[in-house]
Image (cartoon, rainbow, N blue to C red; front, top):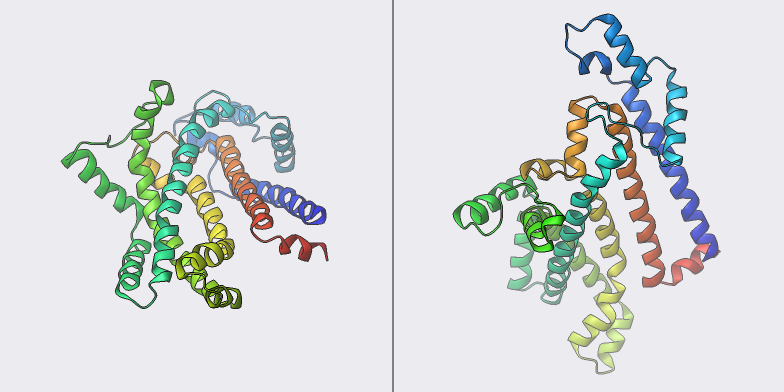
Length: 317
């Protein structure tokens, strides 16, 4: 088990370092001069040169990369050129929106998908199974931004139960802030629940055909007990894998939904920083989101150990 964890930790560090290299190199090949784009087209050359010096663009690429990495190691994310505040402050403000939104979305998705997927597997070949899979197929093809607009029209315009957009802040109270996240979370959760329910159904069906399930049934265990005691727990590894991937997507890929609902999250900050060519913000945020995805995948690997101890023994060989 120790060797398994060491290999995963080394892989995590190497992957994160490669992510910083890729992000930095991609931003270097973007066309245009960021300093010139941030200033007016009629700006004087000496003004542009002064801004380039302030942004460190007059130094070599590898010097800039080294200074950036050393700052990240020390916890110094730099200062935003657009907002003139430390990037760490911007991230701290936005993370209090994006992380609760992602957590709420994945909780809703999991709470819907696993019971529905298990029900479809238990009713395989029947009308219930066909209906669930038909709805799931529609949900997979449903764009989350279009679903978000429909939810706004229904629950914010026709029936004003939830706000149509914006975020009041957690300092206004837990429930007022949570109300602002419910519609965005549903917009993200329902398409993901459709995917997860199909994976759950397939995984449960596969375990239902295993010898240990048939043995349990032959010994007199009821179908419901065999399903929940033997089939479902042993079907969780592919389900947990998809949950981890979905959480990574919800954490790093909410740009469209945050713009639809005017949420001041990290996805919207990335969009604004790219439009404003605020390179330091883009670099820090993309690496932070990539690091979050890598860490989530590492935690999923750890979850495998609890779900199937054989993995650690196989990794030790």
